[in-house]
Image 1 (cartoon, one colour):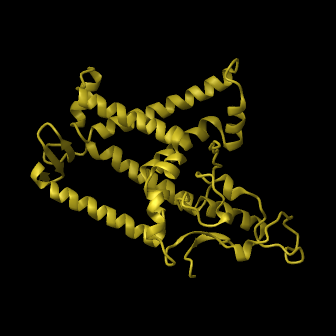
Image 2 (cartoon, helix red, strand yellow):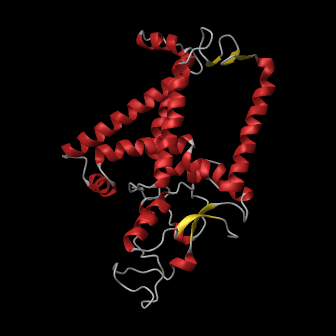
Image 3 (tube, one colour):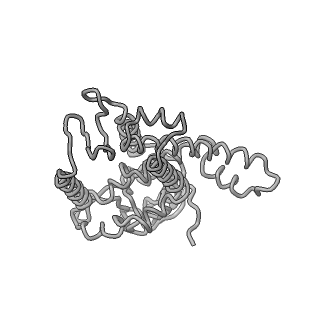
Length: 302
């Protein structure tokens, strides 16, 4: 049985890059349906008229071959990315990780950092007004994000300006309601509760990525030659006289991992190459006065 993971907040180069990609991808996703092109929605898959609009391009059902070619190109791009940089797509641009990151941010703002969330979960539901209030506020914020996401996704399948009117007048048709409800529910459950379970057990990419990887693949790597034997010590201690490596065994790399894995145990298919452990370890190395890069992106043969 999986233990609930409470990822610790981390700052650093890769955390900033990940947040920038979260903002960029969501600006595109939420903003694109509102853009008009020649007096119509720029991007729209209109099932009512059997047309797909992509700015100045209009595709009909008989043009499905172009869509198949596009999907094939995306798959090839994903495989090439995996062969060169491991699961970096998962760590920085995958919708599951992106929305989990958004939900994590909301959770941290409302409930506090990882220790505060642990203490809150240990409180009983019965007679604990504080837990009901904080959890209720968090779930409300999650639901609002999920509703907005579901509505936006439906806006790619039905003209979004008309969809606003239909929603306000409670006149959505059955297909719009089905799409809106399913995507809202998936966003809420996947990003709020399933999270790392999707990446570990459901997503097929995690299973076949090892087939695409080789010695030239750049992945998150713990330098065991430099870090071992690990052990705690003070900042002023002489690690050489203590016969210790650079790893101070603080466990911060494990605490910040959304997948709940210890990168020091070697390559694991669950690792999404997000770089959170790199940021955390570099901060510890800086405090100890050691050089950074104990955990880093590296290739097996270098």
